[in-house]
Image (tube, rainbow, N blue to C red; front, side):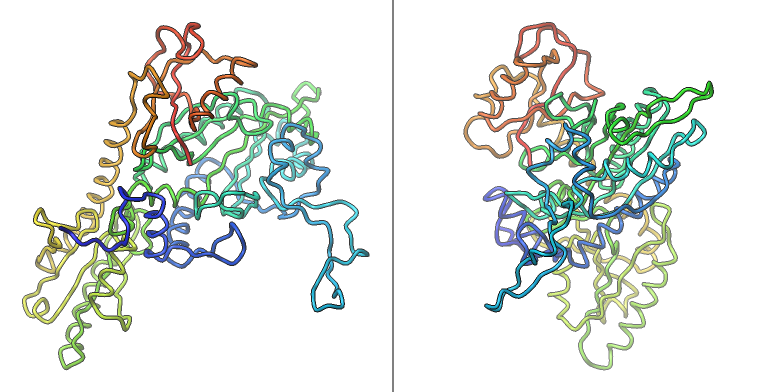
Length: 508
């Protein structure tokens, strides 16, 4: 029997395992404010890697970064009725600008400092950015206008879980304005493809890209698209969304432009975003019973070197050997970037450091002791395959030069392997032969996967009835895959001719 590093396994209790990974990998911790987390250096380092790679992709598409206020006047939201209805229950509201003592040792809002207009703590920025766009767009020459911001948002969640659903989280939100629907739709789908490629290539997290059903659209949107990832327990995680907003937000914010003929038209707008929820997706896609397995492209440190110090005269030679290895590795490129290497000279015991980095998910761990130095070797542990068939730790002893020569290829192999493993699991757990949802999803809620069924795009009361039926089974429609096979036969729910296929599953 293998004795794993975590106290709970995925099979025994997936929810508890997830929390254990976050704690043992030192990713985040509770903050003292309900629903808000402290993201610790390793967790934030992963987010920085996500930011770095995605920001480059955003800018390559001609989008410029900007920043908009955290506080948004309530009147901005009231101009867009569908939007405010969708977010009303989640909004945090600022009503006073000063506190005073109550004479009993407590601080309370000063009645004399009540704001004339309440301010909403940013849940999303369509309204405030739309207000700015109404000033920035005057003629067709100003279009398309494309901006993005990296920021925090607040949505007051009742049931919270770190990284997946928190009252405050970090994200990027892109907002664009266009002269016509075709250009705006092209941008909407470009952003969706950016997220799909990022999830697959950078996070090694296979996803299904598609359009959300009408009942799952972003409040006020004409069309919403998403990437959906399958976690190891079979549940779906919405990992990024892109919205075509039509002219509704433009009308509310008065975003108009003068066309080439001198007339005035409303802009067509889009918004798209993804967040620190992606880190939760990485944990539940790649983690194992020893902690996180971090894809090399987002690992803050791709290779960690641990000197096996003995506190004697050999230590200087070991450290010199490690520093030389560190320098050689840092001179290499992997994924078109310098390899990120850490020489861990902290005071903990070598075994403690090894298992600490295993739990954090460092892709490659290298241990070096006196015998390695004498023999010109290194002891290598790959985090993607930690154990041998007999359950013992899989440590490879190779020549130092050979390890350096193969290091970049090793990182690529780990990245590719993690993606292949997750992709196989995703496609093996999408069933297309389900005839009874209640029976298929009955019993144990874990590890069931998704069902793909024929869909006729019903609306109104028919759609409401289907949504209620699914809700009773704790199911939701995820999206209609863009790359699905053509629809055939009758809709699973209505019996009407199907026009597409829709994915159904449990979700986070």
